[in-house]
Length: 210
Image (cartoon, rainbow, N blue to C red; front, top):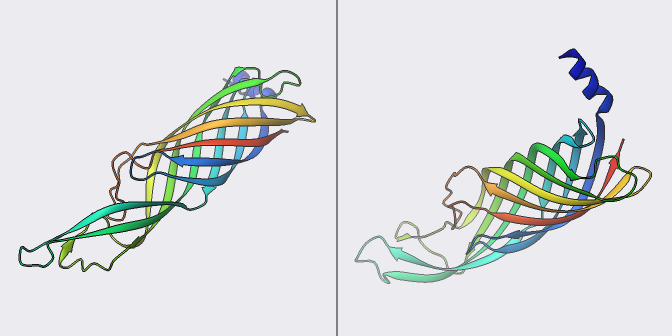
C-alpha cells in the first residue's frame, strides 16, 4: 500500500482550467438558452486518470408557458382564467468526479487528447415567475405560483472533451456536458418538475498543467 501511495505521489500533477459555454435547457415547456463559466481543479493521479472538482454559474434563461387557472368552486366566475407565465431560471453547479483519457494523456506535448468524465453534482437553481394577469389563489388553482423561489437538485454529470496542447503546459479544449437529474424535490414554482431540469452544455476553455 505504501508503495502504491508513493507511485501515485510521484505521478500526480495538478491542473486548473476555466471555460466559457452555452447551455440549453432541454425539457419540454422549460426550454431556454443561457451562457456561463466553469472553473475546474483537476488532480491528475496518473497521466491517464484523475479526479476533478468544478464550479459553474450561468445567466438567466427565459421562457413562457400558456396556462389555465381553474376555479376551486363551481360558483366562482369565470370558471377558468387563461394566462401567460413568464419565467426566468438560472443555475449554479458544483460537481466532483472522475476523468479518464481515452486518447493521449494529461501531459502530452504533441498530438491531441480525447477524455471522458463522470461525477455527482449539486445544482442550486433560482426561478422567477410573473403572471400576465393577477390571479387570486384563494379562489383559483394555478399550475405554477407567481414569485421567486430557490430549488436544489442532485445530478449525474457526464462529459466528453477534445484537447490540444498549445505550448508551455497550456491546453485548449472543447467539451460537451450534460447534467441528468438524480433527485426529485417538487416545487410549486416549477411548472415542470419531473426529471427536470435536464441540460446540455458546450464549452471552450483553457487548461494549465502544473
